[in-house]
Amino acid sequence: MQSDVVIIGGGLGGLSAGAYLSQQGFNVTLIEEQPQVGGFAIAFNRDGFTFDVALHAIPACAPNQPFYDILSRLQIADDLKFIKLNNAFNVYLGDYNFLIPNSFSDFFQKLITEFPEEKQGLTQLKTYLEKYGRLYYDVVEGNSTPYKIFTQFIPRIPDFLKNSRLSTDDFLNNYSKNEKVKALLYQAAVFFGEPMAGFPAINFIIMFYLLFTSGMYTIHGGGQALTNALKNKMLKHKAKILTSHRIKAINIDNRLAKKVFLDDDREINCKTIIANVNTPYLIKNLIKSDSIPEMYGQLVESFKPSLSILQMHLGLNCTVEEIGVKHYLNIFFPNENIDFAMSRQNNSTMLEGYSIIAPGINYEDKKSNNRRILSIVGGVSGQEWIGLDKAIYNNLKFKITEQILNKLEILFPNLRKHIKTVNLATPHTFQRYTQNPNGAILGFKAERSKHRMLLKLNHFPIKNIFLANAWTNRLGGFMQTLKSGLIAGQKSIKYLNSLH
Ligand SMILES: Cc1cc2nc3c(=O)[nH]c(=O)nc-3n(C[C@H](O)[C@H](O)[C@H](O)COP(=O)(O)OP(=O)(O)OC[C@H]3O[C@@H](n4cnc5c(N)ncnc54)[C@H](O)[C@@H]3O)c2cc1C
Image (tube, rainbow, N blue to C red; front, top):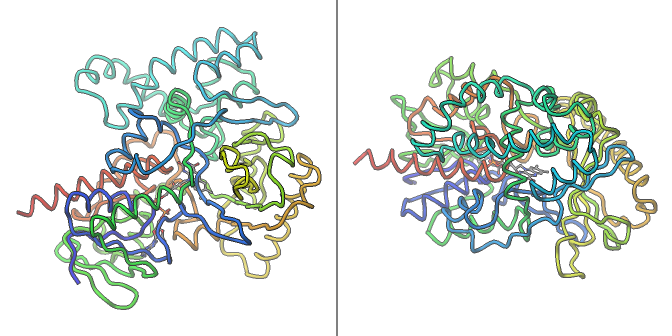
C-alpha cells in the first residue's frame, strides 16, 4: 500500500490532522488500534445508557474565540452545537459551598462580596489577569503580531519568566492569603490534578484568563460528537480509516521514515507520518532506538505523565435532579486545603477531591437518558493502579466503587436505590485503551521552569514525523490536542511541498 501521509492513532490529534490534510487534497491513511476512532473522546453503551468518556468543559466556543477558530479551520464548527454553561463550577470545600459564575467580572464581584476583607488584593489580581492573561496567551499560542511582541511582550519578559518559575500558590499569595479564596480561584486549573504549590503560575494565569473571559462550554453529544464530525470530514474527503489495526513499527532509513508495519504484517509506504500516539511510546515501541538521538530520549524521559484518573459512570432510574443534583459541573474537596487533598490522592488509589458531572442537565429534552447519568472523576496515582495482580485489581475496584458510593450517599441520600448501572474505569483501563503511560489524560505534566524544554519536544528528530497529540508542548485537553493536529498537518504539507 502507498499513502502520502500515514496517521498513527485516531484520537483527537490524529483526527484533527487527518481532517485538515484530507481537505487540502492529500492522500491520507489513518490507522487506529481500537474498533472505533476517538481515543478518549468517545462514548460507550451500557444497559441502555450512553456514557461519554471525556468531555466536561471546554473554553472559548463562541464565534471569534480560540476553540471555535480551530474548529472553523477544520471546517467542522457548523457541524457542532455548543452549550454555554450557566455557571462555571459548583464548588464544595467541606460544608462550604460557592457557585462560581461563568464570567470573569461576575466571579471577581462575587468573591469580593463574599470576602470583603480581600477586596484590595482581588481587585489587583483582576487587573493583572485582564491586562496580561491575553498577552501571554497570544504569545504562547503564536497568535501575537510582531508589533505587539515588540511593544507589549518584550517589556514583560522578566515577569513572564518569573511566573514560569513561580508556583501558583506563591503567585496567589501576593493577592490573598485566604485559603478559601485561593482554592476557589484555583478551580480554573484544578483539573490538571496538580497542587497549587507545584503548578506553574504562568499556566494558571493563561488558563484563568481563557476559561473565565471566554466562558466554559460543552458540546451537545459530548466528545463523541466532536469525534464524529472530524471522522465524517475525513471520510467526505476520501481519507482511509483503518480501525482494529495496530502499527507495530516504523521503518526509518537514512534518517527518514519510509513505511509503517501493521499488526497483520501489511506495509504502507509513505512520505510523512503523523504520530497521534504518545511520544514516550512512539520512541520506545515503534522506532528502533538507534534512530533516535540519545538527547531526545533523555528529554522525553525528563517529563512525567500528567493526571491519572478514576472515573465512575452511574445510570439512574430517575433524573439527576430528582436525587438533588442541580448543576452540570460540581467539585468536591474535603476542606479548603485542596493542595493537601491533591497531594494525597496523587500517591493513592483513592479519590480525595472529585467532580460530579451531570451531562444531561443542559439538555432540553426532559426524557433524554442523558438526564439520568452522573459521571464522577478524580485524580489518583496511576502507578499505584497499574501493574496490580488481576485478583487484587478486581478486589480494589470493588472496594473503591463502594467507597465512592458511600461518599456520594452523604451528598445524595437514597442514591443507591436509584442506581441501575455502575461502571468504574481506572488508570489501567485508560492505559489499555490509549497506550498512554499511567493512562494519563493530559499528556506530560506541566512543571515549573520547564517551558523551554517543552518547546524542544516538538522538534522531533526524524524530519518527516510530526507529533499530533497531547504529548507535545501544547499539553492536553480538547482544544490543545486539536491545535496540535492542525499544526502537524500544516508542517506535513510544508514538508510534502518541499519534495517537489
Ligand atoms: C475522563 C476524561 C475527562 C476529560 N475531560 C476533558 C475536558 O473536560 N476538557 C478537555 O479539554 N479535555 C478533557 N480530557 C482530555 C482529553 O480528552 C485528551 O487530552 C485528548 O482527548 C487526548 O487526545 P490525543 O489525540 O492525544 O490522544 P488519545 O485520546 O490518547 O488517542 C490516542 C489514540 O492512538 C491509538 N493508538 C495507540 N497506539 C496505537 C498504535 N500502535 N497503532 C494504532 N493506534 C494506536 C489509541 O487507540 C488511541 O485511540 C478528558 C479526558 C478524560 C479521560
